[in-house]
Length: 205
Figure 1: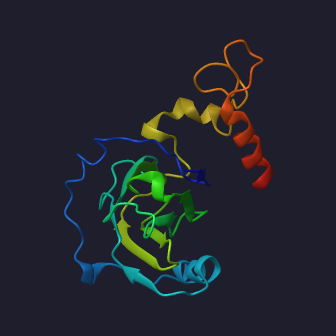
Figure 2: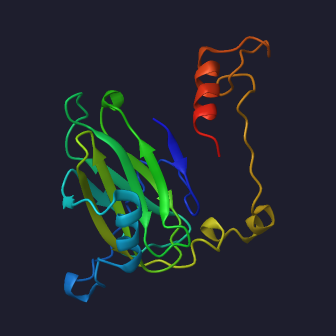
């Protein structure tokens, strides 16, 4: 499973992320029209205006987020991944973020379940969407309106000391140890090394 985290996404798994989601949801009649302008553009550019049905996945997000920089999100598949019928790609979309495509997650029939938990940044009140593309090409989605703001410009958790580290990243892909691609002698390639190189070559950025 390859995860491409795009702008304004801060991905981290958490099994207890939704304990604070006690705020009552806004009645549907008081919510903005879910067919937003940006969603219409994304349906055209990403999905060629193919029909999008409800079902297959369930999206869980807080109605009002405590911190727009770390909004917990869970996507649950309503069926197991089977060779004859499975979710092959999940899209996580935040309509009103500067970069609305928060993540694209590729899956296979061997994934077991297409269940994802993560955290995202939300810049302003917005619909958050989970879109599942199935192996038969059909599209299924669910949208939730989230009240949060400032998530793309503020440090997570109010840690303003983090501002000085903004834009700095660390990446280790060829190092030693459990998470590197070389064995502890620093020379012998692990089996994953060739697969990693092939993936990078096939997906240039």
